[in-house]
Length: 296
Image 1 (tube, rainbow, N blue to C red):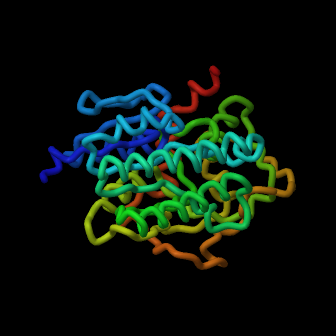
Image 2: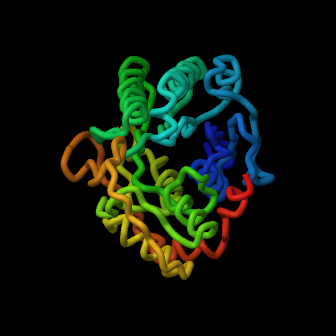
């Protein structure tokens, strides 16, 4: 079957990373369907949109009919929101995933690609981490029972245009734009492997190659850096002179990338050619994508 005739359904396709993945799939010749309960601001004319909720079994079942591959990005993804609303988070992230898996089996979907998180490897992350790790285990069991091909993709610290206010770099750019200062509730020494959403989207499409099926991948930028170094880049680009660090326990947030101290399933996958942090931040500031969030 040619890419042109191959139908790919992207759950949560109106969101930050998922909208970039949908675009990359379209650019690569796939027939893309976006499923979301929020209207997409980025849908192209070549893409189809289905309004729906992953907790609605009938909507999910109907959406997956005639589909070849499913990307599952739909979830409550903000850690602080997740820990303030544990029932809603676990219900959406776990039972929503089960609804999608059940529909994949009933409609004989060839493959599901699940967007997890590096927090699934961490002892931090609270209910968000628990929901992602549980979903990973459930997907693997469905694969064993029903021979459903799958991929688990754990993302590092994503950034880039289209991100919402909950994205950390977008939040600090917004804050700097409004207050002319940046406030970080830690000492800034936490380490992250930032990866631009466009680079991550390229890897998400690359994963479709048959040799990658039924594997776990940790998708990360090549360069590990301290948060304070990234805030310095933002401050320099925006000509902000004031960065305030309030030493506070991060509670649910990890301080060092989990894969550096706790080994679990998952091969590291980096972009061969990636957008540098310097260039990525420059693009973010230039596009001023954060403006609409200021107006909420």
